[in-house]
Image (cartoon, rainbow, N blue to C red; front, side, top):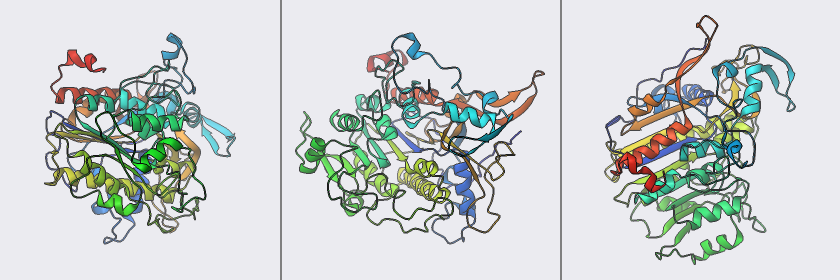
Length: 508
């Protein structure tokens, strides 16, 4: 039986952690695809750096969330179904029992011979189950955003394709400022779902972008997908309108779009302008930060060597803002609202690196995410922030995991990644897929009512034999993403003084 790990107990700051609400500000930070082995690989890499290296994180290479005051548990990520389209009637809303997270299915250690169609060792029946039942970022982000399970590909619609109520919509109805920040395309699955967009398919990208910019729900949108630039930050010969429509982009560039209240979008593309937006009095307009990048801010830059690349060995683009710079500008804008704020900050390219089986850039992207978490903690503690830990709930988690294990993961089921043995600077590891998995993922909470998150975790990740004895599993307690989503909407409502019986009046 695999031992559960316990985070170390140091922190950049623990002022006010775990304080009782009411919750006025909700900050959700998503390391896309970042399961437990993603975090452990990052820790192992950081531990191997010289003590004075700026990338070293907390003392001993620990992550910010490993510090004091954080509530630490896990959550399941299973989809309603792996289908890609809605189904009418009761059948469309029924949970597929095969995709439901089950420790017995996950920790099925029966050996399986041969390779997958993509050339990965099948290894164990549990690995096969993960490959067959994996969620995508659209339905997992929808689960947290709305508290509703749905099918792969769905953005804030249920199994019938009907819209569900989101945190972004609730926050706006309560008078809060709202935003989404990402290191990948602004209308991709995770920012779209947390930004309150609704669509039967995440592939309807320009329609999703139109809703995000035109619905009046969001005050800040940040990400890539800039039609005029490529993945190296160089201007294109002709625009590529894959992630935002040509007409909408023209309106944003010209500053001609207006809401009924007279407000407009201020479009920032240049990194220096985005950095400048992080200080001083923000403009009255809503803030759109669509950097000079297409697929991601950094991961998709040229020079990738997936099997051997060390983090930061390929010079990073100077044209792209960091996640911390984007977060600073977003919080500076959202901090102006006396009713509080709701924002989701996503490190979307962690997932892109894992799809490419590029451990070096995965670690690089997660270090940038960890830096952003540290910034958010320090910002709440700073005098410039209206937020305090008595009224701010910070969630740090992932939307799903990947099949990343230790180097003997083909013979030792679910072996964790291991410290560097061969001196190449990377933790020892093995990939068993280039896609997602259905494993539980880490869930951290900090600040107002964060201890209540632990109480959600009423499931135990164990497999029992016929005599009731535990024979496999991590032994960890876990909740589910939909339960977390319900909890966050409840905290918003209670923080605004809305009685439980009146939630439905606001759409929740």
